[in-house]
Amino acid sequence: MTQSTARPDTAIVILAAGQGTRMKSSRPKALHEVLGLPMIGHVMRVAETLQPGRMVIVTGHGRDQVQGWIGSQSWSCDVRFVEQAEQRGTGHAVQMALPELGDARDVLILYCDGPLLLPSTLANLLDARGDGHVSLITARPPDSAKYGRVILDDDGRIDRIVEHADCNADELAVDLINAGMMAVSRDFLVDALGRLSDDNAQGELYLTDLLEMARQAALPGANYEADWQEVQGINDRFELARATSILRSRINAAWMSSGVAIEQPDTTWIEATVQIANDVTICGSVELRGATSVGTGTLIEHGCVLKNTSVGENAHLKPYCVTTDSSIGNHTAVGPFAHLRPGSVLHDKVKVGNFVETKKTTMREGAKASHLSYVGDADVGPGSNIGAGTITCNYDGKNKHKTVLGKGVFIGSNTALVAPVNLGDDAYVGAGSTITKDVPGGALAVARGRQFVKEGWVAAKKGQE
Image 1 (spheres, one colour):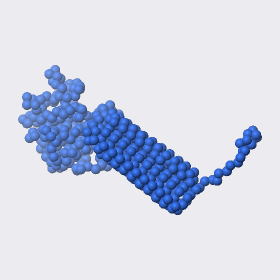
Image 2 (spheres, rainbow, N blue to C red):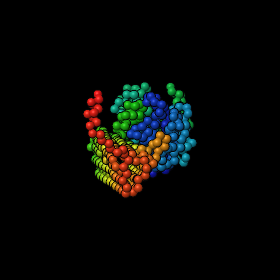
Image 3 (cartoon, one colour):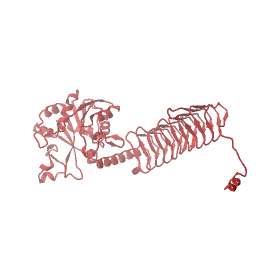
Image 4 (cartoon, rainbow, N blue to C red):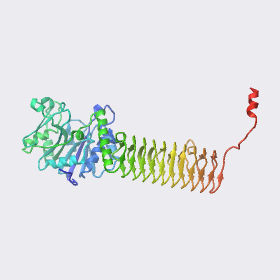
């Protein structure tokens, strides 16, 4: 089976009400991150690929936090929320979602802790149901000891699900288990949920009872077997770390297949939201996070960390640069050991060198700050050069002020530019100056004490000792 086209008649229900006690955290389980994105975000992104008519999120523990994060993102389909205030099982959770299913004909039920799901698996699960009532994802874990067993009939459809404690010897020999996710026809779901019973040891309504109801209706559930690594749920921090490692390897392999050179994939971290052109080279221990994009031909050397940063074509990030909420132009060189803080915009052919820090600064085409400088709240004109040890004194203890350099300005080493201050085109500043007033274009400004030399001073001082 292959992935089908849009599914506007499908509603997707995502169960996200659990606390996740084994995480031992005040954060809701749904919001624990895998490669920089909450688990529920991964599930929703995959669900979006089906182009469903609607997604319904069942919340409970940490409702406001979960809804807040989802509401802060942009989604391609209608997203609704319902609350499962009382935790009475998976069947009860889906009951809460029924009023929000809209005109859906098919319902896909997922869990918030499945960040490794693939779009093809969800499409195949829907297709597997065919004209039946329900289809279920099953899998074969390396160790099935703690799981209930899925027993198939002679036609390969689901006869029953037996909890581990209730299995006989023959059933324990079966290694096929229930992964939880299912596709259900809307009409059958509404009827079956109304007939669920909580007459069990936990006093809960179990969604798995739908399989027995389907068998009784002479339409036993369809089995879609998926890879265990993809469909396993995440219940503790060990499993969270394992899922992160799996997803990281999967993403790195996909980028290498598309023409990106990753020299040390085992040490490279690329989040799912990153975009990379072909012929990019990424060295070891690089992290690309958030809404980062990298243009073709760019080289990112060892130890760089980029977050929400756009990088143009044929740029060069030398080792151990850190950039956040910034933009780097074509043929621009950064580092080594440079720090671009939020609001840094480097145009084409800019050079920001070793131990240079920028913040809320625009450096226009060809501008340079090659060594040991802090450039904050500044606009540096094209072709301007900032000498080693220069700082923009942008903070007066209460407010931030701006420094503006025109075209072709030359700043000598160890200069302090006390904002607000403007330097016109082609202005020069002598090394060691403290500039507190505007400098006209084409002028030389020198603001330092006159050098004083007293010969014989050292001998005279020693004679007094």
